[in-house]
Image (cartoon, rainbow, N blue to C red):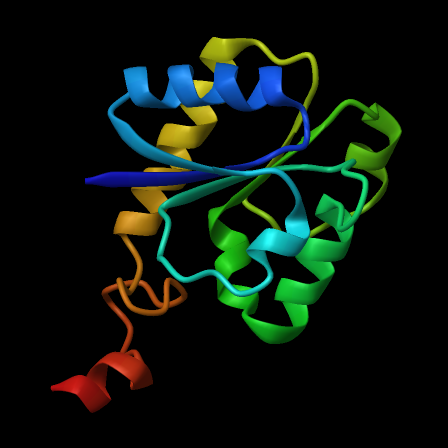
Length: 140
């Protein structure tokens, strides 16, 4: 099952993203703020994160993940209504999409992120199958 997480403080955007992703075959979970996603309890193929949230925004969340679990950034798509923010810095994420977004472009990016997630180590998400993952070799 394809799994996605949407983190956005705007109820309407969350609901819109949920409908779009479910239509594309994803099981979708939602959170209102980045603080809720600091310690994820599940593994997601795609994580959509709003850049501007009131408590713990997308920039803080990606900075935190960069320090704690940097491999997760390969599955993150940042959504920004501030085009300057999205172009000034490399967040290390899969992609940055400006709001308002074209839903077809968003779905293409989500599918590309999902395909990349499948092509990497399922446990850690950071090693292509052609490379030896130390975490997976310990499980064998």
